[in-house]
Amino acid sequence: MSLFRPVCTTAALCIAGLFARTAAAEPGFRLETLAPGVHAAVRTDPPGLMVDANCLFIVNDSDVVVVDAPEASTELIASLKRITDKPVRYLVNTHWHDDHVIGNARWREAYPGIQFIAHGTLRDYLPGTGAKNRAGMIDGAPQAAAQMQQLIDQGKNLAGQPISEEERQSYTSDIALVANYMKVVPGTADVLPDLSPSADLVLQRGTRRIEVRRAGRGHTESDLVVWLPQERILASGDLVVWPVPLVGGEQSHVAGWDLALQQLLALQPAMTLPGHGPVQRDDAYLRQLRDLFADIKAKVADARRRGLDLAAARKEITLDDWRRRFAGDSPVRNALFRRYVTGPALQSAWASP
Ligand SMILES: [Zn+2]
Image 1 (spheres, rainbow, N blue to C red):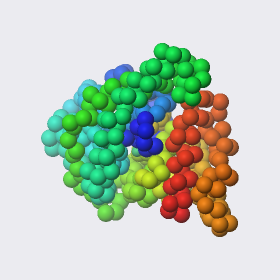
Image 2 (spheres, rainbow, N blue to C red):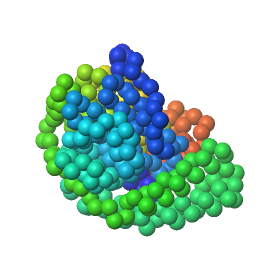
Image 3 (cartoon, protein in one colour):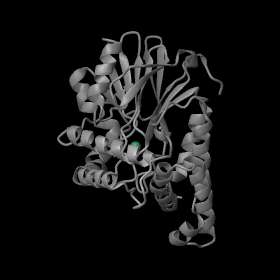
Image 4 (cartoon, protein in one colour):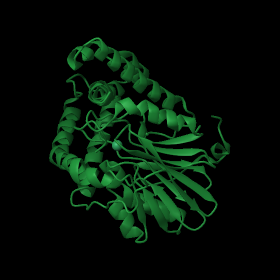
């Protein structure tokens, strides 16, 4: 996700819950053990415009499988090496956004035998739209960070009103994330996938079954998720992001998103590691997301039937009720919902009904 572009530039409680604990980790994320050998690296930044992604380590009998490669991959590799000296055999990129792939080069340096798994479309998007997004970030992010620092110094928020403590913490975190982005990203070479499954893929690693599933259209044209059926743990990528979904008007497919989430709900996950945000230990948030996207799709279809154009539909479909449900009274979350949902979600649903 970026400061400018509206996309990141995430049953019965099973036995896995019994193993949940929190361990010490590098600054910026915490490690949570979700089941024996299954460790979530969860970002600890407060909600903001600029986020880094979560990561999952799956330690098997003789190797490791990792999900996603965010900016903090150097620190994540150091954390993993404190857990195990087994080699990383596979890394799954859930989708092509920088905060899920930019660390690939670091992982390959640390584990030369690693193989990268991603949807085949990543080969097109990363050098195309991905490179364009990255150039925009490198050009614009430092100036945006400087403006945020200026607002903090002046005691104002982005709307020019007195800044709240929540906003101050969010802006401060965003400034630090921009600094890290500028340290890590420029000059980092893309590492494209070695394997692009044309159907769901099963990785049987000793006793561990790991499923790489094609979830269809949603956050992007082709999102992958990783499912551990024995532990009932799901790594959803950005199909699930907390506290508000990340929608890109051009890059996301709102009309398919509710169906993708319905597929995930049908798995009955006991725990879901979102692309961004804390581990979800029931399916309430996934259902809320599914219902949001289904509602947007239905409202847009109805507006089309009545002959409205997008501008007229926007006046009717304000999503204010949904904004209150996701954001409550939080100024930061309300601003995030407006930026990442209200504007782009209608655009996306309108573009591909
Ligand atoms: Zn994303």
